[in-house]
Length: 185
Image (tube, rainbow, N blue to C red; front, side):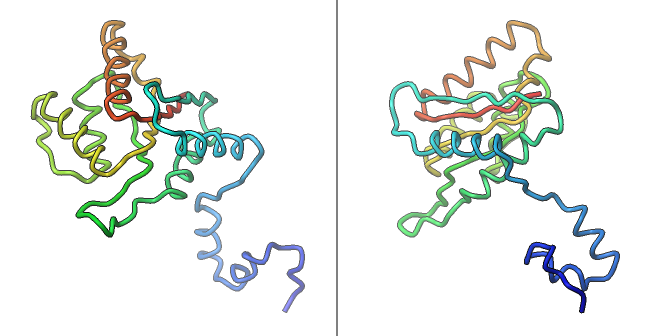
């Protein structure tokens, strides 16, 4: 056996895999905890643990495409997974990661939340029905932090729709006393 001291211990078992298995392993996403990503994770932790107050803090993360914003958000969600609630009939979901709809559309936004929760809903149902269902479910699962990826999609609509969508986000955060994080370009 060759000397593997130059490799991280976690990779020692990979060396003996067949070539195609090693290639698949290399193609998997890998977390690299660089300084800025660690700082963002710390800020997200602060948002998650922030005491509920009337105006909860929010965070907008802006960066070039393929700089790891979605990977950071996904990692944070994995660090705070949904958990069974021993005293209730529902799960507790501290962090929810969704992707903004491709245009500032309230109905599609609520649909994205319901899809992420795995909740049954009527895609053609009224906005009011979806809004009430989202508010009820997010209270039930005790959501603390909503992460919206690709928030810059709201710029794809008319200024009036953009403004309305921002009001929707503010209303949701105020109703649920919720922190939020948005990731963009």
